[in-house]
Image (cartoon, rainbow, N blue to C red; front, side):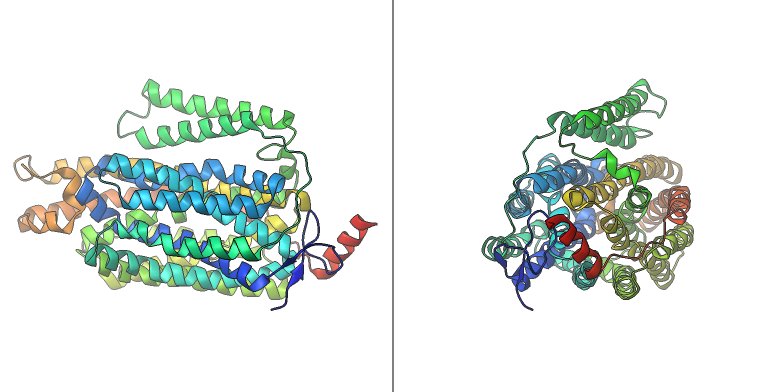
Length: 521
């Protein structure tokens, strides 16, 4: 693949005067960054039951993922804007470095509190990985050409998604769950070396006006919303003044954030982007997808290990068909979009098939065979894969070139915000229902001396008498049913939003060339 040259402030053009960028190593580094981020989410999901069994904290286990997602959600739009202001290479390198430090510390954690704290740091770095990669690709290639490279990302996504559950299970069984974090370190070092030496983008001459007010307000709103979703129905009743106060606070902070963005010279999320209906729809569908598809993975791992009695390694194997469906749908849809330039009906199908998948998953109980579980998860995975690349392509297609970082950051932020809300909400529903089910199905004496937090561990389950173990497994299965039923109305709203998306063709090289010529004249 030949080297290309960068055009100041935007996508590459042949005539633009700029330093040479070595495309192959850069694309390799970007692919590795996607692999690293995807692998991390998958291996952690598989290892969570063992982590809870080791460190305790079943009532807060979701925060191992939630804290990570909150930090990534808060920082994603910031990274996008910082990349626009200070250059994508520098910001990308900082993000990778922070992610690696957080990974190393997470791998050394000795308590649940430590792990959650270090996952926050890891999430701060992760917030810049996807958005920086997307922005770099968006700067290097026009939307039609970028679609082809997104297909490469789909293949790497496949490798990480397919390998992640199995790798997480093997590492947990053979070594310990600590290694699901430490495995990130060698991959991250390779990324740092390749990007440092091979990526040469033009310097950014735009004046830097950091939107500190917007950043603080956005961060506070996300934290308030997440705490309300996490504590409601578990730590406090939904109508408790603390939950109502957090909800009201999140709304007030969001309103103040919008006001601050209207006045900011360089807003974290440029509000003018929402004038474009394609961008607005992409954001709305991304929120729905994040809530349902990414917010439910941890609960599927718990079902497989606790209810079906699978080991971490076997649970990774059982999850493979779902991941295969996700990846196959993502790669096939990406290739079709690159060939035709049309994208509207893929998110529509994603939401529609997702509704069917969620309803099927809601029917699972202790009598459901693994073959049926795998079939249901395959449907769910196909639904998830049909929107993975499409929404980013659609938003980039109609985006102003100077805001490309903010565009990618906002769409990624929307998905991560949805994931944060989904994990917190589903965890609240699950834990509240689980407590009730265990109390109804077992006596206090049956679990005397057993740490309730350790019930997700196969070692603990093996020590229970058969009737008590059956009751615990039935409790876990019953607690997961409302999780997937709650996903259905969210997907219905996502379907309605997707149907409103305009079916615009992706811009190609000719369009971009005319645009660049107009700007240079």
